[in-house]
Amino acid sequence: MAGALTAGCGHSLPSLPGFDSEAWRADAYGCRSKRATLLPVLEKHRGELYGARVNDITRLLGHPDEEELGEQSDKVYIYYVTAGLQCAPGHPRAARGRVMLRSGATGTITEVILPVI
Image 1 (cartoon, rainbow, N blue to C red):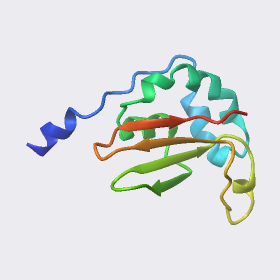
Image 2: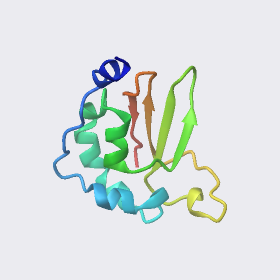
Image 3: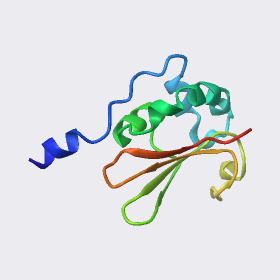
Image 4: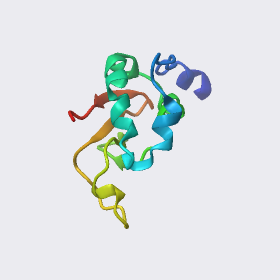
């Protein structure tokens, strides 16, 4: 019964025309700044990200560069877009140039924050 309940939460993420998922996933921590070139396409399809299931986002963007636990059962998935401090040995955190996706208790995206670069 629980599977039937969770299956109805969120929506499948359709393909995003013009978005090169492989190039995004290959640019770990945004250190090659390839992700920055894909931001306009992501911005164009921003509305489709809301309500998408986290598993679909992970298939599209790959495993996040960082993951934070928010209040209650919220999670924040962080993907760096441009080279920065996160590319240095030891991976210090950078506060700029990152995409942040927040998911709620149902495992669906509730907030999309794209950087201005």
